[in-house]
Image (cartoon, rainbow, N blue to C red; front, side, top):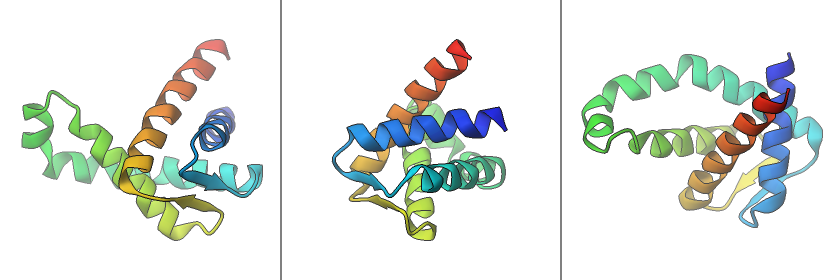
Length: 107
């Protein structure tokens, strides 16, 4: 539960900082964090498995693309989250990762 709250704060803060990402309110940030956790548990391992050669070839940088794809899927599912393009999703993914790491380190 604490991890979902930390992810929600990271999502809300990253959406606030990025012009191309909009989130309605903190409740939608919580819903986005829950969907992100579910997608990372069920969908990400499948995507990583099928893209393993390109992920190894790019030394893991292709994981940013996978994270952006997952965020675009969440954007399609959740009405309260709007991401303008793939590049905004990639930046959003990077900021969420940075903020989550910092918040986990603090808490």
